[in-house]
Length: 135
Image (cartoon, rainbow, N blue to C red; front, side, top):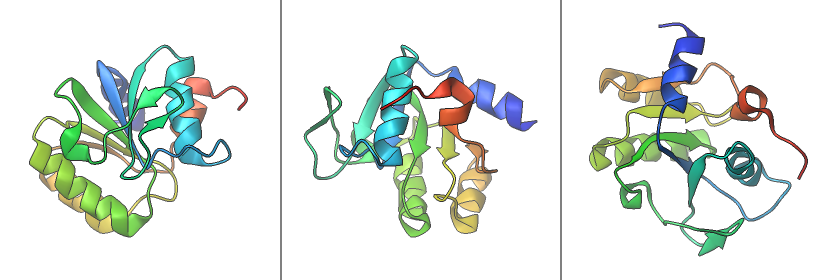
């Protein structure tokens, strides 16, 4: 499958999890969440400390994402991304993982692909693909 086909498949989801969502507007975890909102897509922030980000209630863990979330954007350090992949596999309904630039881990990619997930970890950025506007 080409990267574009992987991206198209990722974007077919009804709802998206943003793992590593941040309440700080200068952080990528905030920009990715806002990017989904700007494109009229339902996104659920995953953050273990925040209760709400950009007006959306947070869940503290990937395992708490509702079943309609088939795709997750991951904006975490690589060693955390590895744990995120494990949680996504345990959840059982995540089909697509997009590791944003800087979140990639060879071990996480390998584990996710071996489990049959659609993985985007080639440096593609959702902010570029969907077009992020402003703050």
